[in-house]
Image (cartoon, rainbow over all chains, first blue to last red; front, side, top):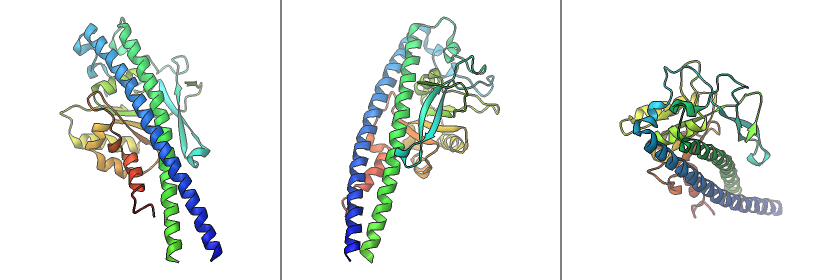
Length: 164
Length: 123
């Protein structure tokens, strides 16, 4: 009986810790998404300025590659590695591929022309920053997801102990 | 930003409105692979829900995609498909868009977390 009480106490303590962890992770994720939103807003403002200079149709989805475009590789990719914090799940980081490393990589800014306004470069930098925030938000989200799974499992164990 | 010589990295897919796709593709995430499959989808007001669903399911099945970025307002449209995706990879991140600011109460993971803190569940 004493052992069960001790186990229950241990489970409750762990549950408390995990609950606090998940609350701070929720806070962190929301903060990261708000920063991401700011970066995207700034990027979109620069896109709008570029659109004003170049014309409405010249900075739009029409310039994006289609299925008929020649194949090319992404210059920003992700690398994943197993993280202890994420209970063995993968955490991501961004890697940038340069043109001299892979010939199929090219600068997307060239889709919009050779002489593009500076605002398009600013927009590119803001969206690259936004990607960094997005990756951080994903890592926090994975951590939160795993914490929630752990809480769910411990609750089941606790409920089973009460049944016994 | 880490620089790696051997690129064994995976892709970031984007499902979003015009500005989101143009922006992130300008950032360098876009790719057209050997099978002529793009890793992005521009959604406008004429795009059918089934098209978005099919695209999302296609990205989930692709083993070269690690992350899917999707505008929160588009995620709302295909919420049932997103909620069914429980695997950690590809990770799905709901991002805000120009016309729809980020709303934490609609976020799939945060709603799941909120469910955990139901007073009846805490006992």
